[in-house]
Length: 318
Image (cartoon, rainbow, N blue to C red):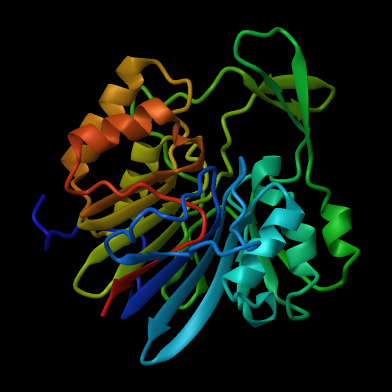
């Protein structure tokens, strides 16, 4: 796609001079791996190491006119491990201007309460609809139901620190960084998992995550950076939605969980092919993308692919 091609969008996103994304936690950590393009990995030392887990958490910084703004998006699974990483990475939750959550699965919210307690009073928390619903899962190869529990709104409100804001439409959460609002589903093949369930009323239904949120930023002279939590809505749907609402076709970076773990090979192939057509400068799959899908992106998009690890900090822009 032409780098300067624009579409009719919902809003004109403010350009940021620089975007810094710190991956607080992810499923994988490798202390001796070389620094990635546009990034720097946090190395280990005797008795000191980044914690990796089945979870995801980001710290996002936008820089405009030499002024920085800070946002946290998702909070991992293990509060002890996440707080360890926050300390090692030099992140101060008290300086965060706003908090956000992609969706209501525990590997994204379990570390939240401890972090919010360290935030400044009155800092907003942006969430999508059904974030606080009770969720369940059927594990692959098993008929046993797993209780995924639920994030309790009351536990957050009891702190008296954070104002909860529910998002359905795109919203600027800090200058130059936007939550996508509810993501439009346009692909034929990104249908989510039939094994993920949500409690509505007295019964359980398949969970299509209508309120799942992603982030999008427009980096000056680079294009869009799309940041996904799990992409239950589909990573192609997510990126195309970001293009549509901003009116910008050029995608610089796609980073995050793509939820292709345990996906059939044909779904992985179609996803990679559509991502190749979108043509981001960098593709950084993480968390729930799954080994097979990560390998496919690495093989078919070798010039764009970055292997993500917990504790890496990326900087995009001037």
